[in-house]
Length: 338
Image 1 (tube, rainbow, N blue to C red):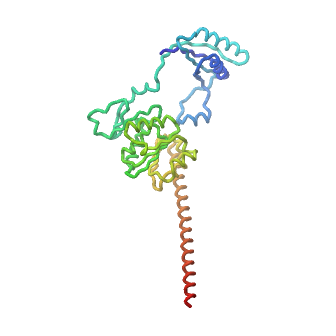
Image 2 (image 1 turned 60 degrees about the vertical axis):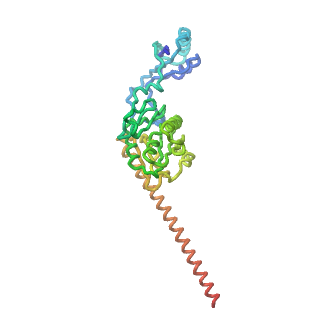
Image 3 (image 1 turned 45 degrees about the vertical axis):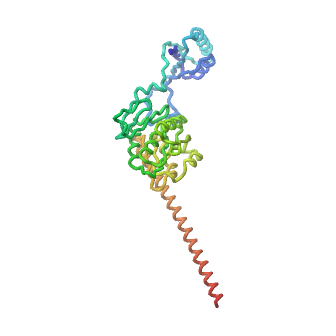
């Protein structure tokens, strides 16, 4: 399906009020382009390490909207121009030039699939769900994957680094936690490598559906892989549900800005001597992640040492009281014989 696209040149001062006017006229959805710098809050919500270089804000904004071919575009554009003229009396709406073009409706959710084909990570064949396994590959270790709108095809180098490290440390008794599980690829491969049980958490609700679908395709039952939605960093309910001191491996293929607040929390989900695998860290932030990891481990060890000392003191006290009671009993028995 083809759409008529209209790109309106206005000002950053007026972009919000103009957007509201377009929606009042029945135009559903407005795309805004400007050079206003991102706030710190915006940057934190974007989860990116490196932002692209942008030009200085010049006060110009472009608002794009789309009309179906059967809509009366001449009437709608006439109404838009009339409203802009009235607005110009109390706000700087700029040039108000409107460019018209034609665009085709593209299925962006599925269009990327034409670029994703089966590939190997060492001897593991990762194959999209829409491709067939070749006869010569049927005896290989195979993982079928369809990330949907969740993260995790297995192609990214950071994911492959995690796969190799999981395989290195996993045993038949391993219980693994994948923070930011996305498509569920790491948790499923851990089970393929011989792990006993996998748990995955993610902020994205799409990750739950994607993981469950991939589990079904790969013959993995829900009693071996549990997936839950929520922020384990600050949600106590999620932390409790995930459990404490019960994981042999914790893997987090996330950005450094997430790993920094995550690590002091996730250390409590790990068994003593557990393996912590992190990836997705750019070189400039390696030291930051390393420092918080070292600090968190040291803190956890100190807490464990304090707990052991406390327990040791309790046992000593208990033993001493038992010895004193024994002496008292013996004394009483001795007196009774006298």
